[in-house]
Length: 69
Image 1 (tube, rainbow, N blue to C red):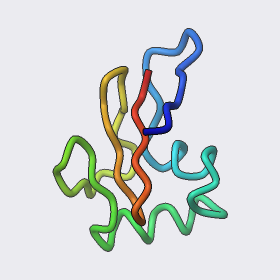
Image 2 (image 1 turned 45 degrees about the vertical axis):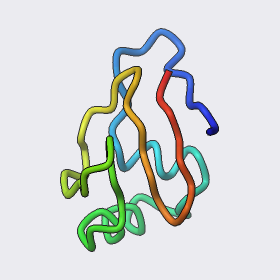
Image 3 (image 1 turned 90 degrees about the vertical axis):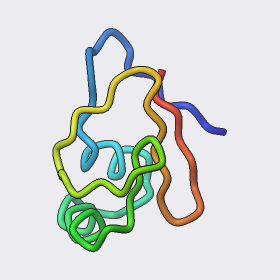
Image 4 (image 1 turned 45 degrees about the horizontal axis):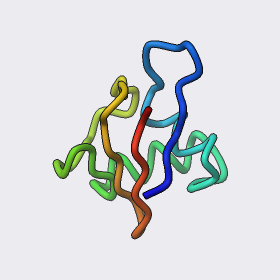
């Protein structure tokens, strides 16, 4: 499972993670995917666009899984 390193940050917003990792091309696309219920955080469908992801959280989207470290 690929990892995303926070690098001295406490958290990363869900929409920003999707954009930074290249899973979506824009913040608007990230918002649409989250609103449509296409993203899971820790195995639960997540609808909060700016949900704060912390170390240990796991994100699933379009068959990709990312663990936050």
